[in-house]
Image: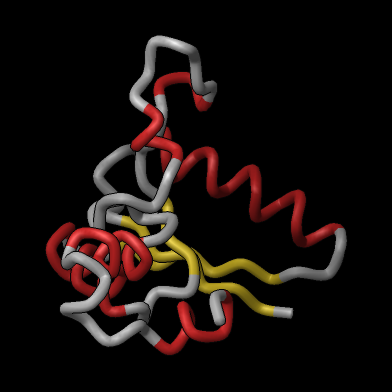
Length: 108
């Protein structure tokens, strides 16, 4: 199995972490390729659904806490890279945008 992870490549920490993940996945037979791109190009590829997997910063420490807005853990904005097409569907008032192909397969 091969996976392409796209990243903005702006942080050496991000690259280091992806190298660790790549080493771990290699042991179970998954080949990971990291492709750094410009921030705007990455954003457009994620929003259009072309990027299969992307690396970007997320929640502080990766742990949700009670003081956080619930919208951070729900697909309510397109700029949330884990579910951009669901976020766009939500932001446009649901009826103003035809559901994306992926959304159709997840939701009747």
